[in-house]
Amino acid sequence: MPEKVLFETERVQRREDVATYLRTVADKLDDGGPITLESGDQSVTMEPPANVEFEVKAEREGPTDSPGELSIELELEWDEDTSGSDGSLSIK
Image (cartoon, rainbow, N blue to C red; front, side):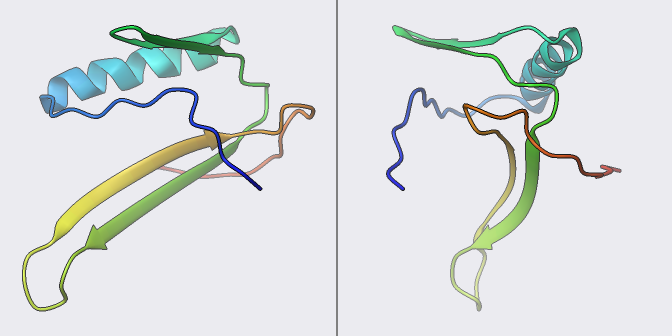
């Protein structure tokens, strides 16, 4: 299935700023309304349904014998024509 990127941004930010951004996204999810992503001249508004697929991934990229790059990826996904699925996850 082809993928079309609707919005993308990447930059180095302080942890506190990332936490504030994630709290804003969480508040929007709690409110049940649309989420608008903006950066420069890019903007996209999406309306997640009540149930979404939530993927959490921790990765290490790079050579096995020397330091690499670590990442935590959080992804919300849903079909445009359905309400999503149920599931359980905890983050500690």
